[in-house]
Length: 268
Ligand SMILES: Nc1ncnc2c1ncn2[C@@H]1O[C@H](COP(=O)(O)OP(=O)(O)O)[C@@H](O)[C@H]1O
Ligand SMILES: [Mg+2]
Image (cartoon, rainbow, N blue to C red; front, side, top):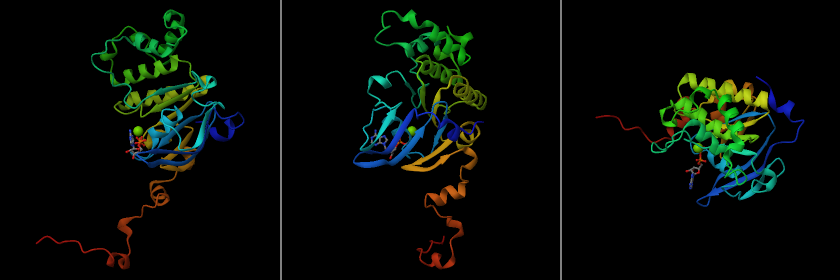
């Protein structure tokens, strides 16, 4: 595993998040988030449900507006020409394709390369499609209907769609959900390879902290704001993490404090 942050910092960040807050229903769901991500890093974002992980991804994609702060992709706003095509997103449950959609793996992956220049000439991009399918190890299933794939294979297919776009920055929202242990492990190895061999940058959300600790180069703990950002080896243990977030050990409560609590009703 590479200690990413110090080494990669020599190049300018591919993703710069500065003082970002995002409001939903008039409430800040993320506050003062600061993050610099460098080319080739594999960054895991972990945190509790509702902690703002998907919100942050949507803000990076420009779908949600920042209430304050700014987000730049290689020095460009997401909506600008300079950022065009540089970011690919695999949404939460992207692999749960509707059952009535009849597409082969090759057709699904081809959707990743469609743009206004090749709309009428889809074959122009076919080598990118074949490369992406091969990279995720689905070459032998390219003609298979996506509904006939296992959960793990389908997840690889939607990742191949993102890869075919040749984006440098891949944002993956909970790609491990619903995958069996073996598929999870091979997907994580594959993602690590993309970073090392192709200098792709991966930002991956997962609540599987153990898997993230083993595979990412850098871990970020997000719950409204960033509580930890660093190499997995320095990631706090559960007790430290709870204390950081102001959660006390209720079992270790002292007797004096217990006096302040309402009496527990005893069964008759
Ligand atoms: N579409 C929405 N409209 C309003 N609030 C939302 C919406 N989606 C999520 N939220 C709220 O934003 C907060 C962060 O949610 P989310 O970013 O989905 O968290 P995570 O991905 O970490 O589970 C939660 O309090 C959630 O209820
Ligand atoms: Mg989410």
